[in-house]
Length: 398
Image (cartoon, rainbow, N blue to C red; front, side, top):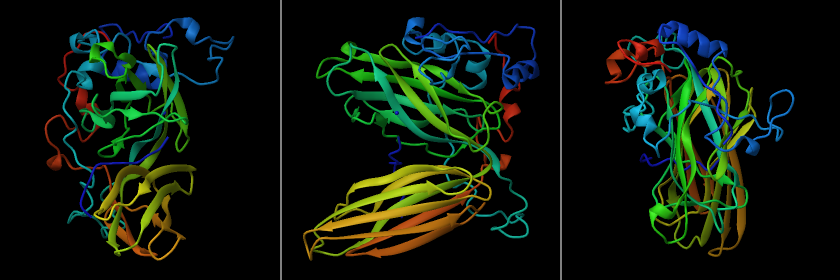
């Protein structure tokens, strides 16, 4: 199948605590504080504390944990571009480039892979981050009518800390949030490595009718930090990011020892006179982790080829189950079909399953790769090991 844009359809200002490090701390000391959890950057993008009331145990009364934020880093006031702090420098936050790395970089086994490509003993599974959903948790009274979101949410890991977009919409093409609050994700472009904290960069706005951009509302403007040390393996976590006129929930899991899977769903044949065909394709994690990701849900056009392309992380020993449900109306009559197939995790290679569902032939292709990428295949600002990202980087404070 031809490669295309990801169209997975999963599910969505309190006072800020500070991440404070003395200038005399070494990179190792800073990293140690982050990993141990002693450095706290709690929760919000700057809304009044009354918006996030806390109980006696210090937890939000609404039961939703807030994401840890990197203090004083915003786009609207330019602070993210003026900062000389650790996070800004090491994660290249002032560079707006998209990640230069592609998915499926290690699909073809190297000549040195032992004993063979399928059970390779040379390339290793790596710790990865899987983001399942973004969801609009709530909006303020200033937001009226259908909520139209634009802007971006981008992940920055230390494999290549350029933007790896999971949501990216222009003002001319906003996403209209429906009653379930789920925000359609457009990525990630490639797998997310999590051998160190991962930063999530938010700059999301609410479009207000047909007015000018200056009339729009800032939903969330911040940089959140997901910690690789305090996250448990194969456990779904939800964190809320409060903003100026609403909040976004992010649901994710850390997977220790995982491979990257690129899941493509396409139409290889569609008979003439087939009528209206609607396809629902969903991906399920079936072992350690119980989760679902929507791959495609819509009407299949006659000229369609690739319907969706989604990049996910799968833990060692796990497998993916892809479920297809097709409804055909008109043409030779109304009918429904359903099929499913499983794909055990691999380090290299791909697997294709073809299904004849009525008058349509559906192709599901899963391509495997590890994020254990040799330095010879990496470009500028790419790091085979996470600690390399901080080498020779000058920064001030946090």
